[in-house]
Amino acid sequence: MFSLKFSPPRPFVSTSLLLFSALLAGCVTDQSAPVASAPVPRSQASITITRTGGYYASAVDADIDANGKRFASLAKEATFTGGVQPGPVTLTVTCWCGPGRYSVQFNAQAGKHYAFEVSPRDEQFVATVAGGLVGVVAETAISGEKSGSFKIVAVPGT
Image (cartoon, rainbow, N blue to C red; front, side):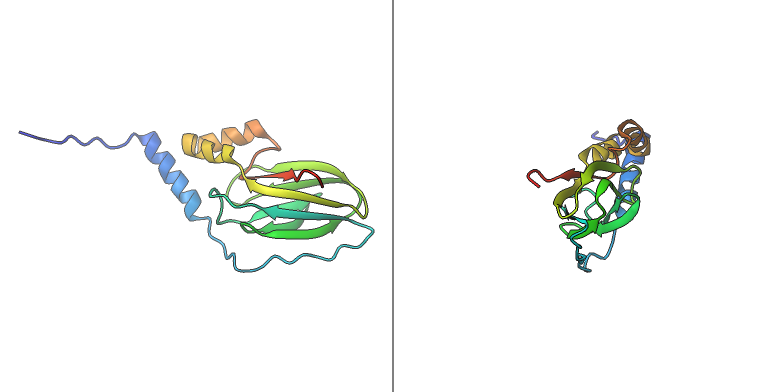
């Protein structure tokens, strides 16, 4: 007689898939609002930040702070240009949907233009799929200021 034996998935796999689904289900925003650019006075440095595409965290805004103050919130494929005071600048990108932050530092000069690109971090996606919440927490602790759902990097030649 022919019979099929069904064995339920291991608890680890089920828990990881459930956690991953819950993280994605909560990541819905209204992306219809355009991001406006602010005029930049000549006494400041101009910064343009462009968010790329990508699947991971594509439904949530990437929040960018300049020296601890909100600079922009970017939906997928949006661009923002704004000004900062000359001197040391720390740009940090975070997201409400995951722990961690990714920071870059540079020295801004008045009248100069700087360009940066924000993109999803594959490392956090892999940690989420492979280890669930424990994997994300471990990856965040290991990566420190280079963790989070997104990364921000300077565009070469600017």
